[in-house]
Length: 98
Image (cartoon, rainbow, N blue to C red):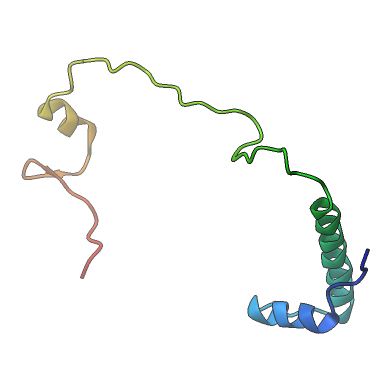
């Protein structure tokens, strides 16, 4: 297995792209950590996954649907009574466009 796949220069380049200022100690630590992560991915790539079906989720998921229920809705008067910001029969909201 190849060790040290990430160089200090690559860490500096990544930090520059992310607009991070790293100390020399942080650069050494991130070089070690990222190299370790890549080594782990190398181990994973050695696994035989030929007979494994691709999955999106680790656990099986299914949609749960609830039946629609017809209910009476609130009247306009009841809805307007819930809001403290009514003007001329309409909801008053803050202006967001000039």
